Image 1 (cartoon, one colour):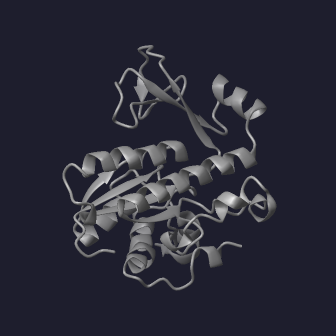
Image 2 (cartoon, one colour; image 1 turned 90 degrees about the vertical axis):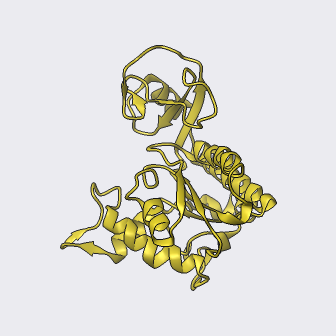
Image 3 (tube, one colour; image 1 turned 60 degrees about the vertical axis):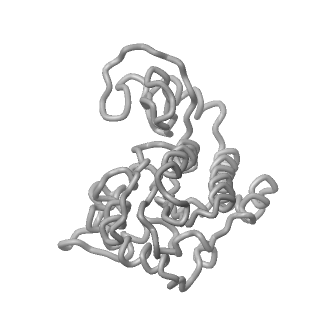
Length: 252
């Protein structure tokens, strides 16, 4: 999967978007250019759309055989909705302070239009309204599985090499074993394309200590050291065909 590759397209949440996260380490170790579409707090809908928009751009410059896609899926409870709210509010990082609006995340729409993030635990009117009245785990898992399958089938149809992972163990939900809305989708995922670990954070916590401390900077995100070891010990062996135990065997 590595031979002949010139560019890495990465998509994910905060586990992906910084240069010292796994895309930066992987691109440097394999001497690849990188298009990093990761962004803090985004959910799996935005992650999947960024794969599609990023490929549109890369395929104008590279042959499909030269592209490697890596996706690290985020939490199932993260959602977003499109808004044409053009209020001129001051931004903090990627978000407006008042309403957690993301500015132009897909890079294909005018900056005055926004996607508004809904993340469980955030203190905004929209978040409280959604999670108190409309949210449940089954619909959130269906939403995530549909986006995984959309990216899987899209990349397969183009003949693009790719791998997937999760920021934490997304598939621990008991609904996977029996729920009629979930199991048909779950059964269609190609887990040979997934890294053979339950989640990046779980793997780092279980395998690496840095200077006597767990290698995560805030108990929720790995440090650069953790991402580097994850890249060396998990991603690169997987890309080289050293599969070992499969992701699905490691699930339950």
